[in-house]
Amino acid sequence: MLEIGSPNALFFRTNTTCNNLLRELQKIWVEIGETETEKDRMLMELERECLQIYQRKVDEAANSKAKLHQSVASIEAEVASLMAALGVLNINSPIKLDKGSKSLKEKLAAVTPLVEELRIQKEERMKQFSDIKAQIEKISGEISGYSDHLNKAMNISLTLEEQDLTLRNLNEYQTHLRTLQKEKSDRLNKVLGYVNEVHALCGVLGVDFSQTVSEVHPSLHRTDQEQSTNISDSTLEGLEYMIQKLKTERKSRFQKLKDVVASLFELWNLMDTPQEDRTKFGKVTYVVRSSEANITEPGILSTETIEQVSTEVDSLSKLKASRMKELVMKRRSELEDLCRLTHIQPDTSTSAEKSTALIDSGLVDPSELLANIEMQINKIKDEAQSRKDIMDRIDRWLSACEEENWLEEYNLDENRYSAGRGGHVNLKRAERARVTINKIPGMVDNLIKKTLVWEEDMQKSFLYDGVRLVNILEDYKLTRKQQEEEKKRYRDQKKRQDLLLTQRESIYGSKPSPRRSSSFRKPNGFNISNGNGSVPPTPRRGSVGTTTPDVLLTPRSYSGHHRQNGYFKEVRRLSTTPLNYVAMQKEDTVSTTYTSIYSSEPDSPLQG
Image (tube, rainbow, N blue to C red; front, side, top):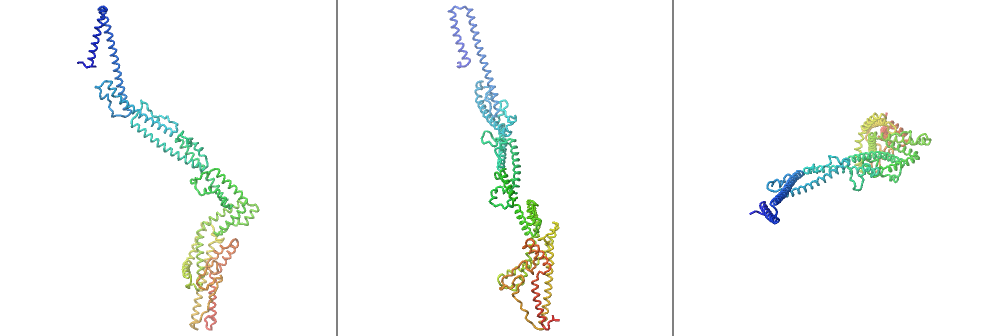
């Protein structure tokens, strides 16, 4: 049997239908009475028309086949192109797998879903590339300042002819995008840092921040989101230049304000300006004690602040001119006080009497006179600094001399060994005083050496209240030597007296020695026997009979020309009078008493 739909079954049905129609046509021709010739002609026309119809159908089928072949080839090419563009390597085409067993329409139907899937993947991939491209172009434009955002190096072509949509290429663009994003972030942080620094500098200088940054780029101070902050090289360079410009201006204003404030302090001190008047400038006074980089107070270096301080300085300068004489006298008094403390003779050319006469006569500008006194004060301070080591040594020497003076008076106290109150303290002090006194000659010699070195370095004499210190120390050494000789003579005389007393006792027997008065007073008013013997004697500086050089102690209590006259009087007295004159006078009196007693005896060896 023939299968329905098979070519043979179709041919069989066609033949049957044609035969039936042909028999019916012949029957009609018979009825009509057509001739055989006419019948043959019409049959040939019918056959020719059938052939034309078949030929047309064959041609149409061939064209359809060709189109299907072309569609299959085209879709295979598209699949290959999509797979290559997307970098897909593990998908096998259904056409190639069933190349010999499927019709063209089946092959086309089998590959269509794959094409659709690849097209969807391509569109998604192209969208990813498009997004990345837009971001890269935007960031590149921000970095370049939108001056070359159409640069071919930055323009990514995503045309179908030149596209590369592989994951590898996508990762490369993503890496490039991340690099640009990091550079943008770094640049943005740098711009923000510069802007903050400009803001701080503008605050200190009192300059309009908005106008300043707008000169670099308008986007640096816009509050809206219409335009992002410009981070191009030109903006960074502009901010760097602006910061340097503001720092230069800050340095200039800082120095100017510092100079003005220094003048203000000087005038305040000269004019004795009360603290309440100084308080209103409290914000600027710390400038002279601060460094430029540490100044952060808003408006502290503004032109208004500098003008305000300058106005105050001008006002005080005018007031200073009207009080110049009083200021000159005040500074001269400070100079004399400084000289008194440092034992340096002040310059007599600017003495109070001469300064008053010069100002009253109008021969000298008071400002010049005041400047001269200021220069002398600075000179005295510098010299006092260089004399400090020697002055410290003088103080230690004077302290040792005071201890020697105290020990002299302490040794004259007959009750010094009593067990009264404070006795052990005085004994310990006496021990320390003896150790200190033994160091005095070395201290004097070292002081002379130090003084001579100073004089050689400074190329001038070291004067102490107008007298050369070396001369004072030499006089002290000479006087101390004379004192030691006097003491030695007294000890020798005492030995001779003791020898005569011993001889007298061996001849006449022992006799009571003359009674000494326990209430003997020194010429300086110190009572050796103070009643209870428990209170230690008090040393007195400048008392006669002490080893303390009065020439160094006395000038401290003098002033003016009285100090100088008394000073030279003390030098003359110190060079002629023994330092232990009172003590030796007392002991010589006792010795004379002994001699007179012994001489009154008939057989005294001192007679004759």
